[in-house]
Length: 272
Image (cartoon, rainbow, N blue to C red; front, side):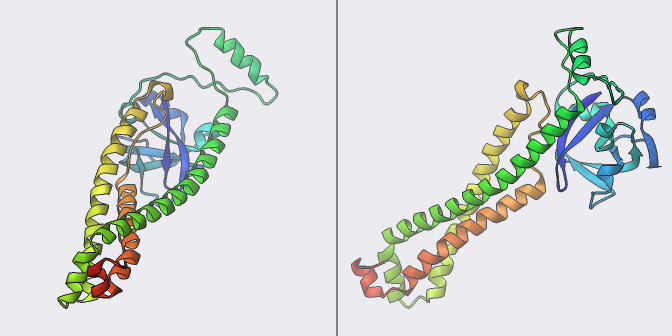
């Protein structure tokens, strides 16, 4: 079995299991059939929370939902199951895993120690470990939203400052345009177009750098392939729109300031 994790729709982290054909019999299907190529089966608890119940996106790849299963193991009941070769391509790993069921009164810590004593190469995790990690992912997601808002605000202020400096250096140019009778709206429009092009260029550079960084994150040995470094088309679209809005909104204030100033004062350089 290959085990990984990936965000699915609004869920910050979902367990993804890549299994061989002989293991599909361990999943009791409520509806549908076992997955073939480019298909997955979904645990009942996850399926009920999905908005799109026909397909899901894992690591920027779309999979059709072929069935819904219910497992006695709560750990698996909240996950996604697909063919092991496709999971290997997603998480860039090949690993074996044995699931051990215990009774409610079992000493889990002693069982973990006994299994670890079998070999130094065996790593043992309890279900509680995954629950703790899941809660940490939710905390990380909330923190990332706050940091993103702060970064957006700082970026907006930075663009306003950059555009103010740029326009101040070109105040004579705008003064001449005003003196020639060019409308204020055209001057503002030209500045917004420049800002738009700046935003597009910034987005392309950021996307290239991000993909390079995420590639190394995805293949980092310390993460053991549990994190897939992918930027979905939807996320890239949101980033693009945000970049453009930051550039345009950040240029409006200094553009209006320059366009409304008296042409004589602009040309003389006494006021911006």
